[in-house]
Length: 313
Image 1 (cartoon, rainbow, N blue to C red):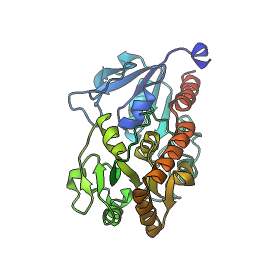
Image 2: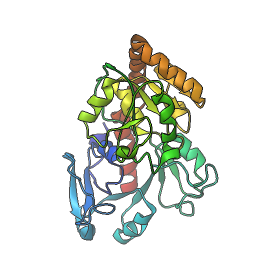
Image 3: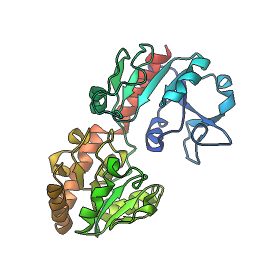
Image 4: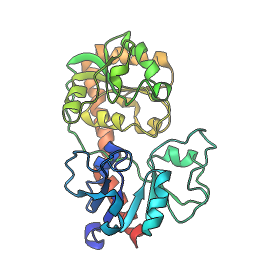
């Protein structure tokens, strides 16, 4: 087993993306999260999370923490890693911006730090130049098969849907809300002013229970790597209606619900799933089976274990 072949590393990373970090720190290493009185964006630390394999280290004492490897997630972190003089990898969470196919990655001129993409779409679309690249797909801690679908409503999870309106597809929600209620959970959802109903930021496991009570999960993002909220919904056993953009095309099988760029097809499928609860439940089980097979936590952690060991050497 890989655990017998590699030592337990001290891995330094910033708490930038909560859901991704929640999966990452479940590995076999010890994870060091910088903390400072100012908190975000540089010193969020554990932020109250129960992560037994992780501990906080003072932002001004990173060298004394003696990390074996640094996991970078923002260009601003390059300088810190160079001061520490330890091996590093860079996780690219985002689809390229500002241009879909011609955006040059901040590491494109370097060959000493590998860029780890979270989707194959991102790897194909970013211009990474000389930088070595690798894809480690998302892995999700299984929240369990919680779907009941007891409420004939749609549901979505979107952070800051007003500020990120077209990127997240929040402008499309009203088309679904004309058919049935659509509840939206996430940071800043209280600011929604259309037909969709914002419920604010609800932490798991209460969030998962609330999501799973709704009959259909709606994922409207136009430009994202691959929404972890979509993968969480599939793990919950939910049927999904998904705008067919970026990696979602490969992540959602046809038998899991509806996948299209045609809004009329999406809303028609939404209506059908709402009115056919048995069909919705079957689609949800198909979604869960696919998500467990392709986005399970074990494969994610094993891939990262190999890369971290290789980088630390």
